[in-house]
View 1 (tube, helix red, strand yellow):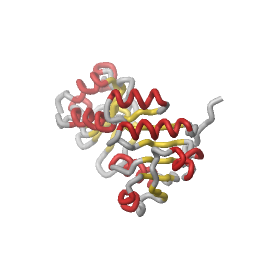
View 2 (cartoon, one colour):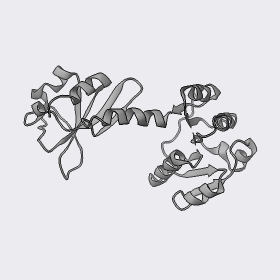
View 3 (tube, helix red, strand yellow):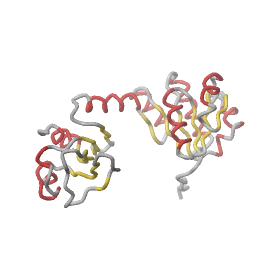
View 4 (spheres, helix red, strand yellow):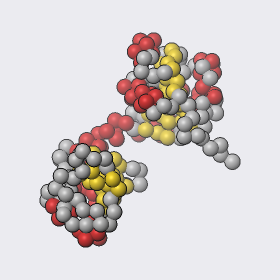
Length: 223
């Protein structure tokens, strides 16, 4: 039986470059217990006032990981990217220490394959994903964009003209364009879930879900 990992389980973040520091800082803001480590004392000192627990150590050395209690963590993020060799070795060390859930940053497809083979449960491609996101935003038709592995996307955009002033069910968004408006934001108000009778105004923003192709097509409609 696979051990259930608590949603508030402490997280070990290895590497305090831009990606690792951003991850550790956000986890800390979410009130997660975080231990962030790096072999660079300067980076450890830089982030010590923004992340509750920071330690200088060399995660390539499994004995160093044992000394900081890495084996007691259920979740670890390997944010080291500058050295593929170090990234793979650290991931292998965490596997040997039986850390149940390992997230590892990859800088290339081949790097990601190696990380998966040595035991990383989740491989992250932050630069590739950021590049893909920007490609969808530069057209100016979308304000934000998230794509998931199974070609399901969420996008924030201004509503096409035909959607405005009528209930979503009457506008035929889903039947004509195979997308779903899942949320609406009016100025000065929080996002709300969209319903069949929700009426979108000229000043609203909408959150749309669907396949990449369908959402792109919908985003290109007249506004």
